[in-house]
Amino acid sequence: MGRVLQTLEKSPYRDNTIVVLMSDHGFHLGEKMHWTKGTLWEEATHCLLLFRVPGVTKPDQTCRRVVSLLDVYPTLAELAGLPKPKHLDGHSLVPLLKNTKAVRQEPVLSTYQQHIAVRTDDYRYIRYGDGSEELYDRAKDPREWKNLATHPEYASTKKRLANLLPKPEAMAPMRPRKIKKGKGSGKDEK
Figure (cartoon, rainbow, N blue to C red):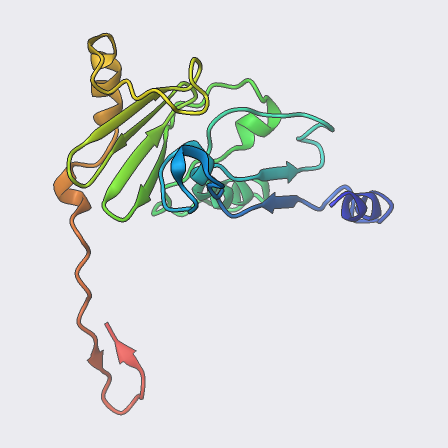
């Protein structure tokens, strides 16, 4: 990546080229007795996201806010001066690119099968398909070892975070849609 950016710096495109680097989500290598990607803990949901935007970002700046890969499209649309389609779930990261300490109100949701999690800067709350819950105070427990979901002093935090999730019935398994063959076109129609 360093070579790409060094070459870009020497090119005539350095002042009008946005570079975005993102990675796939993480993978457990024995943490919490898992060797997979299929969890909603930090180790499996965290991924790399880098922006280089001429006139916006500064060298060596780091933002520790929680964001989603759904935010990449609206961010690029805003940076390119394009209208953001109304159907997008993500939010532009331009305020954070300009000021890494800017406040971000939107939490980040992650799903895996019938399980869903909400992550804020300070907490992770997970609701599993069977109704069981996990709550982690990320400031005190960044490795997410101590589940606080049953601790009475965290009841209001758990309730606040749970209210950010879709209702359990909205997480019901998706049924396959029936597809009818198009007449004479050779293409499927929905």
